[in-house]
Image (cartoon, rainbow, N blue to C red; front, top):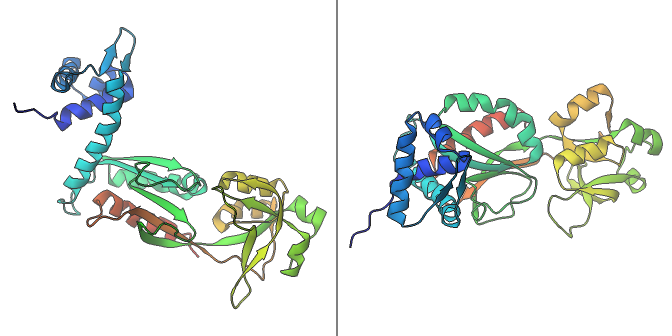
Length: 303
């Protein structure tokens, strides 16, 4: 007996109904009659032999089978879209879903302020931006790509360099008034750093400085540890110690006097920025185009 596979159209309708919890809203979004949406769901349920949605007068709720199908079908359609992208020329419009993870400070800063222009170029593309400083599992967590600052530690992923992020040594004005201004590497023995650990780590606490010849790692004491870039900058402004933050992020606070630059003779080495994605023979066009654009954006603020 031959089994009829669900159509991608019916799966997309199901996903939209599940996301909106409404047949009516899904119909409005798709610009089709509500009966068309109902027919797609009924056809899908009949083909799969399971009820996917519980319908009430007020809401639509996923059944257990519906929840399982939602997770699987989203990735299935992404994979199908990726397959289709492989055979499209660069002149054809991008479409589908791009899931990307990047550091919090980058997402809330330069990326979000310029992303509308990229979306205008690709109106049929949908982007899910996850903003976290922890290292996610690209494959297991279902990301198309991730943006990471610092050295690459996962050799199972393909790596595309995007640029280098300029950093600056800073402390709050209140901190230097209370503890003095460090000028040399020896001075750091008497100072605190703001400890930044996005992932659980046993690595020795230290900052890196360029002494004009080589990069020097200097262990320093700390009183506070944070796990994301927003809290890192906030802790520095609050006077917990010296921090090394992106120059572009520090500039407004330096101009206002909230922060002051320290250790000017020993700047931090620029931090490499990379786009990481699963090894594939053919990288999806949406990942390539996003990488091209992000490289241009970050290049304007790179060291």
